[in-house]
Length: 234
Image (cartoon, rainbow, N blue to C red):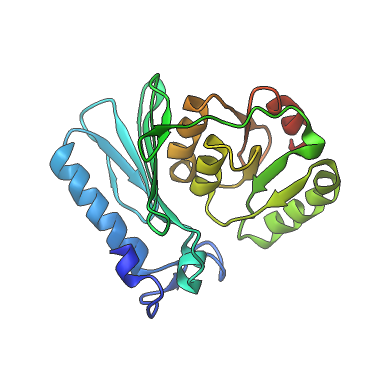
């Protein structure tokens, strides 16, 4: 459905947290399709999705759904967006899937069983030098948060090889898991943004840590790099 609409006229576009943070009918329809599928296949599980779908469930499991991560990219016809679905239980992440329809790439992970890209095992890049590390990040939509993030870049950018800002946190983490970047950090996102990607990185041999302070953030990298990166961006 998302591919069929991609590049066509935008419909039902509304602002969310700010005038630049958008939601569209494509987001809503994707969420409806996923929620209906989960209700049919896993009726006892809970659900928390970005555009409002929510169910408590009778089991100790809950699905975290971002039906279209990278909505602004999608609406502009910029091919960097994804669908993120994760399952958590009382121990944390259990299953994670990030699907990139444009590239026909599906990243999958399950706890204790590793991470894969289209069925082939993947692993984080084992890199231990911050000054030659390629780091992914993202920016929030609130003006005050964006100003803080821009100020922080003055100290961060000279210390790394370069920064990449793709516009889909789920893809950033999936690409970290398969070695396309060396690290990732960001503040201000929600559980559904990080649910699948966090497990992908962990199962690919990486480390994901919470950033202290507000708003909540994550930093992720291979085990040799993550502490140095956390000190830099924390």
